Length: 212
Image 1 (cartoon, helix red, strand yellow):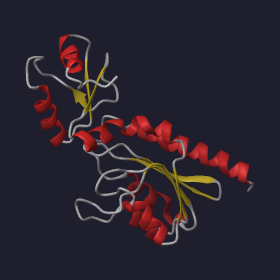
Image 2 (tube, one colour):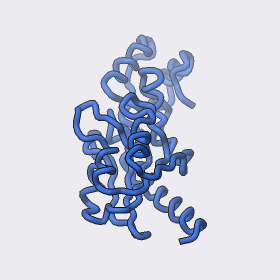
Image 3 (cartoon, one colour):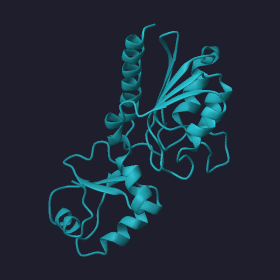
């Protein structure tokens, strides 16, 4: 396979992984929606996205689905595989390593304490070829709320007409302590909330709590 063909395949398969994750947005909190596509010999042999409720992770589903075809295969993952699990269960990095995956292509690096480069580092130390940043801008919408919660402790809030792809609607009095309300929801695991146009949206905007 030529370099140009490989680059074209990489974009195509990562695009598929991103599409899988986008279809799960709003269903996987407190975990982000992640897509994983496994390719062997240029053929897509398994795919999965984070399950509703946040578990199992995409890699946990895709690896068993691929069966023995994971040996020497490439995994396309929209977010860096975790290097450790808060639950103590096998990390997604380990799932890929133990399955015999040879190459991992990652769109976005995970800033959470359970990844933050550790997943990539573990994979590379195990001898896997790891590439990051492919279609990172396309994947950014998947993780903007998750990143916002990591950085601020609050879910991101946006105006929406129907709330499609959001975790939940933010319902509060415009006169309430909105920062405290959002912090409480962030602690509960919410990452992306929506409000309709109106007084609450205006109050959030006035306090710098509404994302454009």
